[in-house]
Image (cartoon, rainbow, N blue to C red; front, side, top):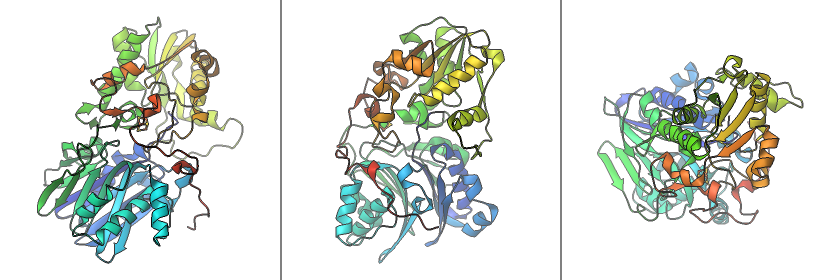
Length: 478
Ligand code: SF4
């Protein structure tokens, strides 16, 4: 129920034989749907001939039977699911993108956000480049393609481009003969690969997508690493590795990733249970039942209950079939949206002192509605616990935490937040417990900038340079 969104998920496959790689990519994207529901796309490579389809909508709706048939068979495929921020919505920004140039053609997709977007774009435009979108991937593809024109291979062009592109990016690229995966030198966004029983290599944002096609996880792509998959085998390029400390987004564990995924050897489900455990330890409270906000609060609620000894209960039922539901426009749109999505289970909460665990509290507006639902169902006390620390800073690495103005914790004390949200008590995971989610030293190997203001990279400073101020200057022509 968090108001936060991840901006993308990527999936790719290379098969030893011509096969239905589009179908595998479909299943992979389906497993990654939680990372983006705005648009999706697949490019199939059949011996160098690319066939692609992209559109707004979720995987199920976009890839109908006729579309899947039109994609045909091939030996490689690349897919993407996307959540668009308000300034980059629209089919025109859907990925993967396909670029034709004098040395051939390339398909690209990525997850993240580049921090020097405007500088790169300005430089490219002054050099004659013309942009059709305002998405990062077009800038990335321009930089890579420009390098490709003066170097011997597609992987070398990416290696050179990585010297220029700053910020967070987990990229998958496809040439007629190669599939390439790469991660920025900090490793902000996850990217892993595995192998299926028929010898196909599969690359994905999360291991749950490998599971969906029966692939066995081999390992993560290392921060700064480029891995090239082709008929000749696998080649690893580590020029950009070990240039700085790893900074995997800690919020992947708290909220973004699916709980059945394993990231860098750590179970997401376990990390969330640990969050609940530490929430229970840091501020013990007397209560009758612990419930979680579906879906990403459930694991932490379980951890809280196990640690505190307070019984775990099912406090809400989530309607899983909601999709893009029509809501009558009016004053209570947000409340109506929450109500049709969630229903409190009165049998669990009536007459009880409830500990309510959620993954995070951003604006506080959704939390207030959820608490109201619990009170209406008869809860006598509601104690809200957030398995993320307080959000105090914007994210520049692919999450839409855009402005301090909207963050409730930036503008109010705990007491004020308790009143605004309508709870008897409120607590956030303490910063010193953050590393304990994944069993590492505090601040070691992960990014926590939205909580601490410790950005691992230079960030856009002036409002003019801030990528979040990019303007759509004309209406998209469908
Ligand atoms: Fe993740 Fe926050 Fe870092 Fe963004 S700023 S990458 S949301 S930890």
